[in-house]
Image 1 (spheres, one colour):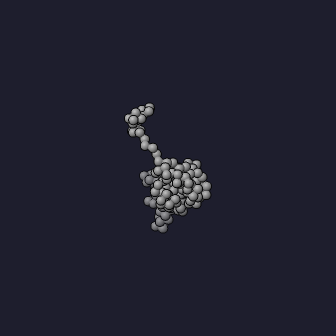
Image 2: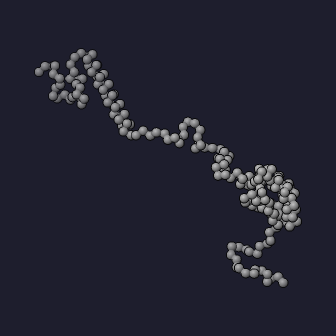
Length: 190
C-alpha cells in the first residue's frame, strides 16, 4: 500500500467526514491549515448548537407595565405621597378636612368655646357638637353662624352646611353588654 491512501481502516475518521491530522499527508503547513479549519468548524458548530438552544425558547417581551430604569408608580413612595394619592383616588378630601377639625378645634373656634364643647360626628355636611352643659349648648347655638363661617373659612366653602348642638348626655343606667327591658331603676327612688 501507498502513503497516499485517504484513511487507514484502523484510524478513526472525523464525524464531519474530515480527515484526522494523522491521516493527512503533506507538510507541516498543510497540517496547520487542516487543524485551523477543524477548529473553526468546531467553533461554528458549538455556536450553532447554543443558538438553537436559545432559539427554541420564545423570547419574552417586556410588558408595557414593566418598570425600567426610570421612576415608576410601583417604586417605593414616601408615605405622605402615597396617602395623598389614596385620598384623591377615593374622594376622601372632605372627610380628611373634617378629620383635621378635631385636632385644630381650639384654633378654629377659640380656646374658651373649645373648652366647653367638642365635635362628635360629621355626616353629609352636618357637624354635630356636644356641649358639657345646657348653658354652653345654648351659647353655641347662638354662635352657630359664626362657628359655621369659621369652619367653612378653614375647610373650604360649603364643607359644613349645618351645625347640630347637643347638650350633655344623660347618665346611662345600662351597665355591661346585657340588659333587661323594662322600667329600670325608677322603683328605687321615692
